[in-house]
Each structure stands twice: as C-alpha cells, then as structure tokens.
Amino acid sequence: MVCIYCGGETQVVNSRHQIRSNQVWRRRRCKSCQNVFTSLESPDLATSILFVSKQGQLEPFRRDELFLSIYNALGHRKDATEAAAALSGTVISKINPKVANTKVSYAAILVVTTEVLRRFDKTAATVYKAYHPIK
Image (cartoon, rainbow, N blue to C red; front, top):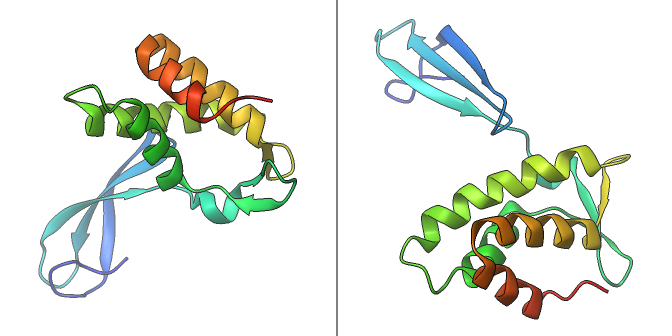
C-alpha cells in the first residue's frame, strides 16, 4: 500500500484480525515521510459471493443494497444510519457460513436479515418482511 500523504512505500508496524467484522486492521508507517496511518482490509463481497435471485439468476452480492434495505426498514429510528451499518455487518457475518461454492440463495439472505432485525427491532423486522416476503 502507498502512503496516503506522499505516495511513498509503507511498512506494516501492527496488524490485528477483526473477527466479528471479517477485516484486518493495520497500522502503517511511510518509509519516506514517516507518517503513520491506519488501514482496514476487507474482502470484496461483490466478487466473492453471488446470490441466486428470485428469478434464478446469479447476481453479485452488494453490501450497499443490503444496507439500504435495512436502512429503509429502520426509517422510524433516529439512529437508522448507524444501526443499519452495524446490522449489515452482522447479517454478512451470519451469511458467510451459508455460502456454498461462492453462492447463497436470496431466501437465505432474507431469513438471516429478518432474524437479525427481529432481535434488534421487531417493528423494523415487520417492515422488512412486508417489502421482502420470503416465498
């Protein structure tokens, strides 16, 4: 990775795995300007996971679409943005074990998302189920 300040080469001085978020946190130091910054590495889900849509087509999994659907369900809450971001991460961590050969079904995503929302906010789970019925 290049330095965000000068574009020089960097070296990793500290690294930690974030198991809950499936990320790697790294502290980096630039070899040229000696500035220190933090980076987060996470898998590119759009190229790693495909889901089988309602029509039976394979489509890339998009975290942003999941976030928006959860955000819309949480529209009645003041903290909808922060909650949707955290809940999206929770849903993704629960979906990962269900991925087989890089594929996961649309129904599996709906079931996991509904369950996560139900535990967090029953109203949001009801709204989500109304717009995303499991068939």
